[in-house]
Image (cartoon, rainbow, N blue to C red; front, side, top):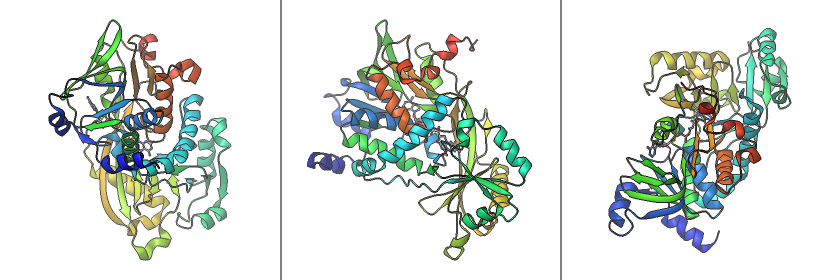
Length: 409
Ligand SMILES: Cc1cc2nc3c(=O)[nH]c(=O)nc-3n(C[C@H](O)[C@H](O)[C@H](O)COP(=O)(O)OP(=O)(O)OC[C@H]3O[C@@H](n4cnc5c(N)ncnc54)[C@H](O)[C@@H]3O)c2cc1C
């Protein structure tokens, strides 16, 4: 790391706060901020895009209305389930695998530039079954290319490799490449690294509205003044649909609430602690790098509150204990809820808005935004550099696709 980068990292470990930043620069820069690209939204997606742009030497400002990773990204389990998830299309499945690889490649550099450890672990995922019938039904729902990434563990292999799993388990599929990480750490690492590379990361920026005219996007109006730019990337997760309405575009978002719990094993029970992620049909159990085990998640479409219910957590813990009985002796730490940003066709809105030159969207990642963060950053930077969606093979993710197909009435 060069002296310059080290110096920036030292002075740039805290992102700028909108209010403080505004008063600091009042009269001087206020109302005159300019960058090639403004990224709106400091969740995992906005942070990944800002990092990728900054690492390519692009001038970028990231604005976040609250704190970095304060919304959905802070609720995630952090699984990079590229082989285990049932993706809607082969394009999504390919992007998921590429993104998992990219995250592994970025790990060292992000740590170096931000000083933040993302807690990435590759211990593989186990999908268990109670009987042969259950396993066959599951296999029938999987697309052919996902089958190559898994191996079958019969009862005896399973109990050798995962002695903490219930003795009643018939067998399991094991996927060795699956990984997981600490999502808030990753988002902060992206933001910190982007800042070290010269990006401005400003938290607490309120009242953001997009400004566009007949020539395309002009910038954004905000609580700390006007910012001008060539490109705006809207990466505000759940709020994406509302923000796009400001410029007359329809990109509906469906909230899907999820609850999740954290437990911890006592040291003398360490032998019973799962050392691989259990990815079952009704629950997942994820041993994290910080020593906790996260158990998730409920799925409640149409719900956008963050209330954690007794019923939700009770169901999760009961399902988890049916696979890993030792969980019942572990200490309950806490539970939380978040809201996934889903779309009507299950695909994220990723690309350039053809009707407003300079405007890009990157939201609607539903239940895989952490996994897809790295590839989203890379694709958005490619698009901004002038590559087309067609060239990048992501035409089916075009932000205006639903209005084109007249799905929206
Ligand atoms: C329970 C649960 C478990 C999950 N588990 C996983 C998992 O294991 N693996 C995985 O890959 N994914 C998982 N997900 C999904 C993942 O969390 C999301 O897909 C991802 O966090 C979406 O990131 P985002 O940056 O688009 O949204 P967010 O994290 O919500 O970020 C958007 C940001 O934009 C900001 N913002 C909003 N409006 C404005 C505005 N007007 N001006 C400025 N800023 C604004 C918000 O404050 C927020 O910080 C899970 C989700 C939940 C709820």
